[in-house]
Image 1: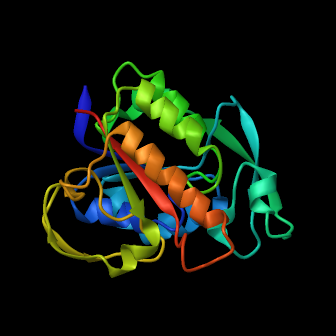
Image 2: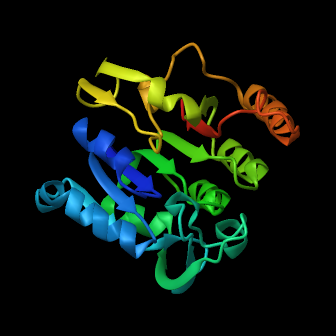
Length: 246
């Protein structure tokens, strides 16, 4: 049974998304592989952790059981990944740390099935999408950062999982999305998104912007084609794919 007060935050990073969910009154289970991000998160959210509103899990979400190498970018913490080629895609030399792994089914069994699952795990996103397809009961809303690789896998697994509504949200615009008295999910609050924020989700997304699977895939392919053109006026920003179960 879905817990409508629960959100999974896969790719906790600096905690800006979790901060938004917590402010709206949700209980949050955040998963993050980077030990330094975990330390900062524990310090930032001492009260919420103590109150039981937030649980931070220092593991990587992958398809491997046990321990996984995690590659930490020396400057861009949001580029750190379980995939060395992504963490070092700009020529940098990543720090390698071993981390324990987990999967969506284990976390759902332990904490419950969330209303919303946010996924931004730098290259392993399609693995999580595949794990969703194997769940007997699935989150009502999910979102995936799609710019790194294998967007086709994310789309395909969400489709076979039964998700029928889709939205593409340009994350570069989130800092301009003022959220005064946001309603639709949790408490009504005033909030300002950061450059790392995933922003609105679920019922707070524009109700007239939901697309079919085919419409969303065609639009995303067109966007990717623009990104491949050497012209920064065309394919700007990076996209999150949101999906919902009806």
